[in-house]
Length: 267
Image (cartoon, rainbow, N blue to C red):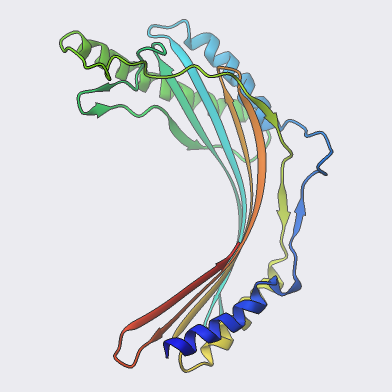
């Protein structure tokens, strides 16, 4: 039975690997085109400069800040045993903020004893390119992370006064790096889900008709992801990537009752 399941799967996967001749549309500038800076990158840079100017004068001062926004556009279509399981499309943006207080030599991430404070946090941000709204969300998360970093640094300094540290503990907490600037093209996808809905039904129906297979799931996923990063050291990065994946899971049972699972994927 295991051999039957495997040969049947490989036969169908050979056809699936061609994606049935359906190529989702992708949108990206030609390789020789000059990439444009996203409004998201501009908002990150503007808020970084404003926040750094303010927080670096406080006690304790913020000496380093890093912002990153990951924007994801995703399409998922899956079927099981001849029926459609789900078909949806979603878009989201996620912000990560890192604020370090103190100095490169000693900051809020310093390991003291067995404890080490994490530096940074994350939060969702609006998907609209409204600079004012984006900057407000960034500011709120920055303020939250600065307060947490300040409290952590105070506890660390208090602890250092009453404990002798090892050579490792006296090492700098952070390294200063040269800034890098790379502005790549943004990407997006446009997928007609209808043909894929029919195909996941057809693929899993074919498996359902085999007595050797008791369950099957086929999933098609398309994802366009753009990332934007800035740091107080001067780094500015913008890049995008498109990914497609076709997954197939089948399940059978051996004569002795043992479950037999097979999973394949194409990227």
